[in-house]
Image (cartoon, rainbow, N blue to C red):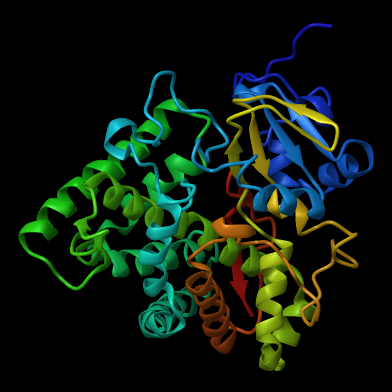
Length: 411
């Protein structure tokens, strides 16, 4: 049969999700849940030759086992779903990011001490300080919705929050937020587009180079200055490591969180009973936040094998990528009863939206706070909102999945 290549993407359609999956396929981005359910029954660990070849586990048990086994499934060989250009350095930006983006892209010992430097910035006490800024920002954004009577809760709300919070932590001027948004989208959402991916990486690297030079000459009280003044084993931290840690905060702290906020806002716009219940029963917020994180987990990390491994009968070879499919793990009915239902008061919820093992997200406290505050502030003043009739809802996917357009009307 003739190859029916998609004229827009240049890629052929998926022939069989078990042996030819493509996480950048529109069907996967729009509705991956049915695909995961089919694979769990037929082929719990799928394989594809696309994007350099990879494996896709779909059960909670397999995903968590792989995530915790850093000896066989290390992070130090690359965490991107898409392989780097041939001949490039391990880091996503070549020699300048030669240390990668630690701690997430590193294994011990680099992972251990870089994570230790990040954790104080993400402690509950520090996050409480960031909450003041976040709440004020959300209130300003809600003002705009009230003035217009409508708006886009993805592009005009969710996507405006994390980029400014991270910018606040790094000391980035507020007017840079739209630029950072585009760079992060280039790196994650368009990772399969080599030109856009490199544009984002280059933009982030060039900005951070200038920021590090400036903070070296004139230190401030932001995270960049703090890293530059920190030491490891009595020595200043090498510049590529500082660059990588700052790049991680930008890349991992923006698109992931706005995708979570956007998904929750989409859910509330399309499920009026849940929206009204949460507005009327604010004591449900803690369990509701965890349920939104579970049901709409945005992030699929990758690991790259350094040696051959056989896992659950699958002959995995050195160089193969393993996609840490945390979103599918969180929809596994063996781990979560009624896994495809959003249950605001779900009591037992050991989700892995933030990963598992030593590479579990160091910024989970910050992400939870941003999600909670975004929902609280919106519902406090706009308890009734719904999708615009005939409006278009679009989703982006790949390594980070979330809505990009969710037009709503108030009342």
